[in-house]
Image (spheres, helix red, strand yellow):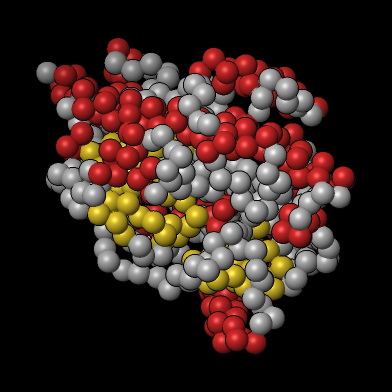
Length: 560
């Protein structure tokens, strides 16, 4: 009898009920994030897009039309999405940290919101992509499945325990810049085999549904057949991704979960086309977002408040009835009517190409500050330069056929300041910074940016090498201290001396647990001291991680 009681008690411990039990009413949440895509969706007014499934989702939910990323490129922005903190505050602003052989070390208080959800009793799962720039801490996810090259699991929640509310993040990669490759694309160096394989796979998966003659070519691209074809290919990729969204919704319906699950669809930043991806223009920052709640609250409505990607993490925590921690620089915008006056963004080193740009935007005007005006915006960038639109721009520059708008991005010096009226000039082509009639607007946005930078800080104010030295002294990754165990009778407490470390535990096969759990038992997040029955005879493993540090060695404790 004692053995059976202990097995049941151990089961409770292993599956997280030593933490706060999920409060009643906590919804399941599915966050769907498409890559490299602006609001090319029928429900957002794009007449070329063929997106019936996202359009239906929008009809059953709320469309948020003024949402902006904190960076025009994936990794810095994904760090902001997952933490609710601006990249230049975290040290994740450069694309990529791996190109300089380091991982960013955020302040010790910073935790990714999936870890905070796990602490509150949620089971969490992620598919296909992390890309946070501070490593992949094992404390975030119960299940972290797949990779960029494999199709996403479109029913990922089925891999999680059934007795907990779940948070699932499904990353859909078919709209990524790399899917603009064609069979003729010549991948450079290490990218060669990847690009060739991807182009072949895409040809087998994606139907041609978009007429190149129907697409709109912005003034900052040459209007050529290859440019039109590439934009049409982007729309075709979106159509394919839309079908995946439809499959996710159908799977939720089939599992009887649709009316107990909040579904959010959005993108990680703007289009994967040049002067969009990696930029701080709206083409790179302005993203669509749809929220469908159980019961279809607000079905078919539109919300035009300014929202930043740093607002997503606190909004999700509030949906789950979890307190928003003080380190987050965003606020709940999806569950409240709170509004913001400005959104902010940055552009820093892009692969091998240095830069330092900051942007502030209100509901109408965009202000850009170029800290390195001596550098042209377009400079050689290996990955971007493989694809058709950028190749057309380079060819036009060589031939001298670019118009003034297109030639501007190859020109140095750049203006130290740019100001655009996004209502009158949605392509952001007419710089108003030197126009006296707009001096008051310029001064107001300058002040807003200065206030923001004073509040959140900017690690690009020092050389990247200096920032790396502060995070990884002598270029060496710090190591998280191994957890120690403190025992008071049958109560067990785990602790790592590394500030900001998170601790996870599992029970190793052997002893009483041997018949129940294998060595592959998932790591469970340690939240508070564990009380074991008097007759306990188990082996406990624990390890710790601070974001950006190497994980600790595994500590093993025999408990009898």
